[in-house]
Length: 566
Image (cartoon, rainbow, N blue to C red; front, side, top):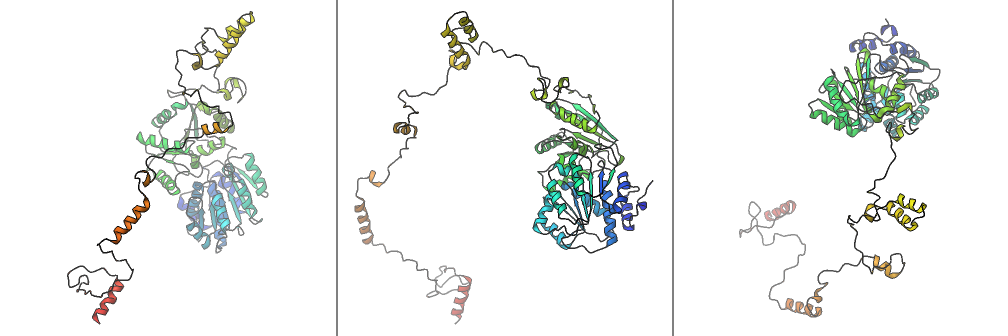
């Protein structure tokens, strides 16, 4: 059995590995670490949970510890790209665990987190940058991150990164790096996009494949439960009652359904919570931390948690909704059965998810066993007679195996006052009967019921017989179409109420003002209050008469007290 000491790792790394409780390397670590220690490019295909994060981190840390150089501000030596925040945080936690006893610096930059700490770390200088593509390009555009010193470029979960549409960003950042660098790529699935990207980025790579391509852990029990869509929630609660699980991870397709199912389970007494992309980053971190610490044991999530979620003892993965892409099934199920542990993967498949199930089985190259141990088993609506999707009268495009019959209109819908139907009038015309009656019957048969049912009332608006023709483009027609002006309620002015000359009223007002005995109020001049004729007591608030004095500002009052003293 190979040991970590046989991989020529330095002493600080070996002590950190022992502190973490690792005794022997996994298969991917045994195959990948020697090639990476030699500086070769590598393409690794391994199932999740096989220790591939440590497979590329240990050689990187070993090289940086041996070089022992001071980091350059804004110019790291190692760039590790991850598709999701959770995976980037997981890689950062692994770096922190393995760098103990060394003077290495690292930072994790991703969207949803404040810029200040990330800018501080980059300006101080770090050896390793772990980033998501979006926030990485933000720092490159700001000038706080440069690629001129990169010696090692790592793409983790690159298949997922391509699915999220980051291929152009990856090519752009790779073009800005020095050509003399080491490039490492890891992927759980080897689709054509991954192969094409590896051909453009890697130089004479070493290909390491531990598990069979597009495979899952051998210790995972896969089962599918066929059910109608309306019975999926009842089946989910039955599974949680039936299965003996330590921690269960439930995957759904939409963010709103994530919260709905978590609230339903909480109402039934289960310790459950949810995680999805709409929740704030600090809340997502808190939920994952509580799930890891065992504060609750049922986590409802979207595919955002399928990557980077490294929680021990997840015994069951339940696909409440089948994944839209078959590759996502591998990453969902990869959360259980990690590091040799046993796991269970249960998929609830409704009638509309049949083709998604077939896609997963084609990718895995195996049939998934059907679990019928529940009262809602239903396999109707599947592809009948082996027909292909969208072809034939019974294809899924037209409703699956639904049978159709010729539509025969009821007599009530085609009733007419002559007690005959359109078809009968046509027959009479062919026999030389009433041609006009046949035409009338066909017209009546094509009209709605309210047109010719005498027992049904018609709610139609009343129209005036003298209504002008709207089609005539003349002044009268336009005037009729325009809304009438609203009449003003009440008088418009004073003259409409009282028949008085306004000029006479103004002259009377001016005479009354001149003959008034009431003295006019003095106008305010705006001058400041003076102490002329006013004396203040010790409190500075009252004069000798006992009347309250006018309040003064602090500066003015201080100056007046000086005048009193003088």
